[in-house]
Each structure stands twice: as C-alpha cells, then as structure tokens.
Image (cartoon, rainbow, N blue to C red):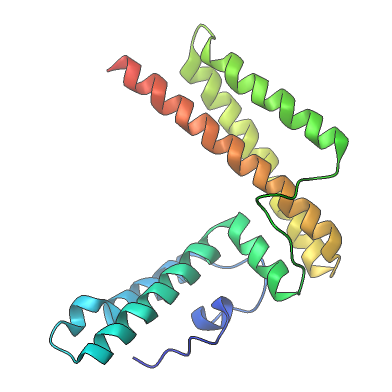
Length: 180
C-alpha cells in the first residue's frame, strides 16, 4: 500500500492532466485500488495500518469521484491551473445564457403538467445532455488552448446544466412513483 497522497488525482490514476480521460480505464484502476486498499483487508493489521488504509481509501474515492464527473473534473483542472473560484457563489456572467437557463427551468416545470410528463421530461433530458456535451467539448478546447478564463465561464455554465439535469431526474422519479 504505497500511494503518495501528495500526487494530484490525474497522477494517482496514471492520466495526463487533460479533461478527456478514458472512463473505462479510470473505473478499472479504481477497482484495482479498492481491492488492494479496502479497510476490510486490514482488519487484523495494526491501528496505524488501518488508519492509513482508511485515509488512502478516502483519498482514492475522492479522486475517483472527481475524475469521473465532467463538472468536478473541470473544476479540479482549473484549480490545478491556479484558477480559483467558488462554484457555490459564482455564476455565469453571460446574460443570454442565464435567460436560456431560466427558460429551461420553466420547461422542466411545464413538462410536469404535460399530457405525458415522462415523455416530455425524457425529451428535455435528451436536449440537456446534448447541450451539456457541447459545453464539455467547449471546455475541452478552451482548456487545451490555455484559455482558462473562458474555460472557467464554461465550467460555471456546465454547473447550471448539471443542476437542471438533476432537477429533471427528480421530476422523472416523482412521476414514475405516481405510476406505481
């Protein structure tokens, strides 16, 4: 169990610091770490070895969660590039984008009262995924071009889409429960 907890998440998993990473390789490496490091494997070890196992497992879990998520990975890359921002309080400064997100929020609410709410929500979910993918592609290009201010703005927009996608998923779950 020799994992350097000072390495960044990309180094830990053996990836270059790029936005695009192979999710299958990430999952495979994560499973390998888990089988090697899981605290259950250290049940009969010393207290110190168990503590180290727990700390290392927590670090690996955090790294995996961050690299697995487009949004978290974008924020992490910006942080590694010394672009600091508070994702909870900062928002996009693009007025047209903010108007678009307000309209999308309204569409989510309107979909719930449609004749076929699940179909309307499914269609909206597809639309959001397409727009989210466009932002992911945009962030990738901006980051690779070292246009970090634009990449930050795109990451903030990506955050809106993640929230909207969560909102749609919750509405879908509500409607599915009503059908049961």
